[in-house]
Length: 170
Image 1 (cartoon, rainbow, N blue to C red):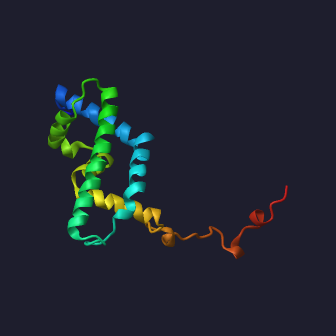
Image 2 (cartoon, rainbow, N blue to C red):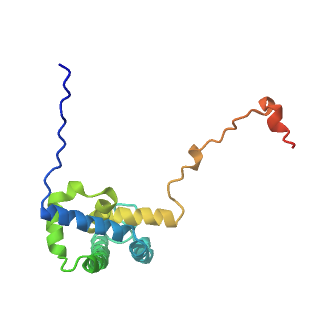
Image 3 (cartoon, helix red, strand yellow):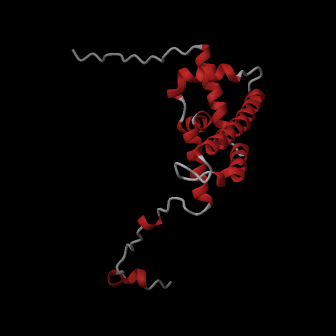
């Protein structure tokens, strides 16, 4: 009559390559969220952020802009990829960046947001440029200001403060 049905919980099968991919992503997250990577990235952006403007056509001709943009992107890719590969090789002897990149294309929906955003700056010039524009706005004090949306309201109205709270004497 009232027999309880047994629930079955099964874990999806995970291959060795999936486990390896997950381990690399975990290490990658540790590297990106560590102390050295943001410093490396900030130093690069400090050097070049003034070259980027939030317009379709900058002071330079479009061809020059494209050339310099690609130059900065390639320099950034080289810097970041070399750093990440060096860090991953320390953690995973025999790590192969080319193999991981190929695997990443099949697992891109499984990568955490921060890691995906950083990887996107390595593959997409517009994401790369947007990173620089955000950094420039922050450096020049033009970042998003949420202070105008804050309202402070007292819990007590001045006439309704209980006597015990207005005259605290022991």
